Image 1 (cartoon, helix red, strand yellow):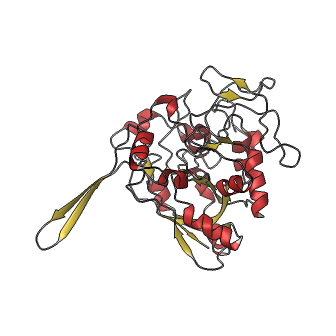
Image 2 (cartoon, rainbow, N blue to C red):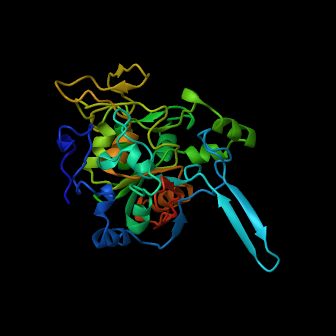
Image 3 (cartoon, helix red, strand yellow):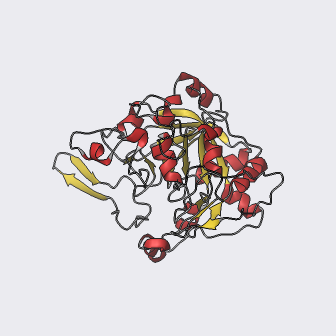
Amino acid sequence: KARPAFDALPLRPEHPYASAWGLYGDEDEAGTLNALGPELVCQGLSEIRTARVFSLALPLTVPRTPMNPARRPPKHDLICKGHANDDTLTLNTQASSHWDGLRHYPYQQSGLFYNGTTQASISRASSTQLGVQNLAERPIVTSAVLIDFARYASAHGISYSAFTARRVTLVELELALRAQNAHVRSGDVLLIRFGWTEQYLGLSPTEQEALGNRTGDERAHVGVDARTDQIARWIWDEGVIAVASDTNAFEAQPFARFGPSPRRPSAVTDSPHRVESLRTDEDGGATAPASGAQSKERVAMHEVLLSGWGMPIGELWDLEGVADECARTGRYRFCLSSAPINLPGGVATPPNAIAIL
């Protein structure tokens, strides 16, 4: 089903800001992945040139200490039975490379998840509503585009720590795309390499452990700029069906919250480092200047993508190998497949993602 323009969201005035509830039916649990099907499989396969294959998942033991102190590292036990071996795995599904599923992060003001699903509905013992089994039942096979912002920044003398709230703007993403001679196509999974993995693996074990033990606003990470709706608008209007990156949350942390944006900057006329004048909110985030009688609701990008659109967010992906190959060949488009675990009622899942170039 064709998407309406971002400016047409929400589809009903009583729904949360920028949500697309009801677009695929009031009972839908697949969100933007409704677009998957034979046409997108063929679109993905058409991107294959060399048949080189890259895993996009880190080892389950990386990061050494999960970036959220409430999450524990995996526990792996070998069971020797004499005649054979078994093993057991205790795993927080968001501790390493993963997809955030639609049960993860609701609209914070209302507490509602995709299509108006309540926490009470999700918390019922027998409920699997919005679980990651929906991702497993329609595995992702489509085209993908990689924006290697870290490589672009290095080539243009832009330096930053991946463990600070470096907010990468839409202008910067477009300039990186242009430098790669790449484009976004409807039906794509959008991948962004911020250099988080490269910088993390360059730390000592002690530094890695300290990074995972940060709390509150100290838990800062590079990501897309969500102080305005500009990147969310761009993702939606370009027809992207899912997003993923090598950083901790795709959007920069601590989260900013945004409302309707009065204008969209242009990569042609705006400086790559220009940030529009913003008002700081009471939480230390920022939002675009108020515009008429538009919604005053302020949201994080997680709220809109996961609970507004039903769009999975990939976090902590390993994009190092595929980025090097894209730089070598000069092609930043490829086929992406992802077979999430079939866990009824799961909140998140390892991506089991591969890029085929």
